[in-house]
Length: 287
Image (cartoon, rainbow, N blue to C red; front, side):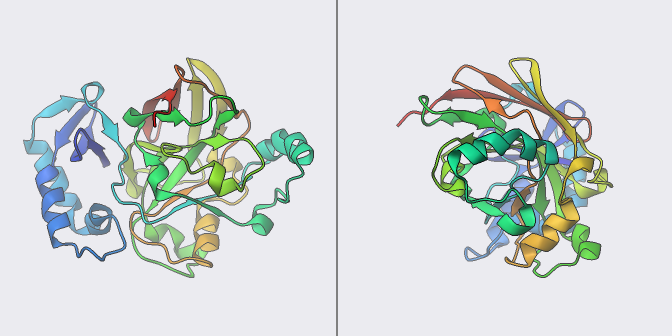
């Protein structure tokens, strides 16, 4: 199943090239969720409402995907966890910059650990990337994103996939410079997620997900999650050794080589045959 948010916070099920509005179920679920809950209510309830969503979708008229504004499929993200230097080709690509900048990082994920991006950086593809500092280099980073479905901590690799709700495509936008990694990656709009969430049952092997990124139609990044240093289950194990993860938490799994700068007016296209495609406009930040 492909679940999206669109328009003015409406919930949809994507079937083919049509979105079927099932917002009434979202409204019901949110009304029953305590305000103090640490989760995205719809993601948390997904095991109980999945069949209802599909039944409702089959009865609802379809809207063309191209006719709506797609938001992040996760409405309320407790945490954005991200993996640095998780593809060997990207480590090699960035070595000169690390040396020149005197980075304190080792480029070894097990040593450097994971990092967090601000929840307010999360947007959907239609909202685009607002370049905060046009005088500085802002790079695109293509990533597979894991959406957590159940609360968990100290998870083993053998059990990790039982806590996954689904997968999305992600952009970890990055301002290059000397500041702390999380600081440079957390401006508004610097964590793009979409075009929807594909439920875990439709991606039976997250170690074999092709990924591609283009800027203005030109391919810049192309890889497969088979090349991850820490794969999805190892990332979940690693993350939960430090944190409790909650429904709606997302894990950006890292980027491959080919990262490069973008500027206002560019369009970034992300695509995977297992997930879908999204076009993300780049624009100037407005105060």
